[in-house]
Every structure is written in structure tokens, then in C-alpha cells.
Image (tube, rainbow, N blue to C red):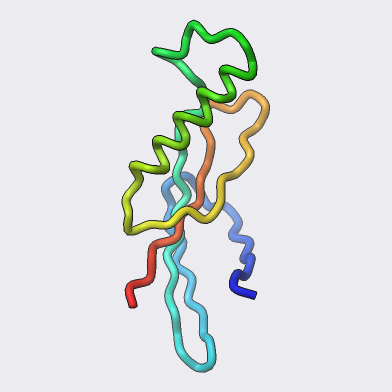
Length: 98
């Protein structure tokens, strides 16, 4: 097992959660960040009416946002947006320098 799920209540967009873990007597510190990206498509995608095309456009925009994100942070989880969500939330963890 490489991952542990730790529920953190009330974590807001762009909040950073610091988690300290003790493993075999050694303390390891993790930083987590929730980012919020626009989930609605607009601008160049306004002409798209087909639901599948609009979904693909959303995925394309999210993929671009993730690829251009700060390389010191690694993607951990993408949360499912609600049916009429304007934004999608993504969880990142700061890379540990060894």
C-alpha cells in the first residue's frame, strides 16, 4: 500500500493542507492543494451544441490546465463536478525533494 486516505473537512479552494506522517520513526511532511478550474466551455467552444462535443471540450481545457500547472506539484485526484458545476476541483501534492 502506497497511499492513505485522510478526510479533511472544510478544505476550500486554493487552501493548502500540511500533513505530517511518521513512518518508521521518521517524520515526512506533505503539502496538498485544491485548485479550481473553469468547467464550463466558452469562447472558441460557444458554437458546440452537441453534449459529447461540449464534454470533450471541457476535458481538453482541463488537460491543458493540468499540463501547464506548476511542475513542483503532482496531480493526485480530479473530483467529479456536479451536474451544473462552473468549476472542477483538482487535488495536488507538492513533490518531495529527495
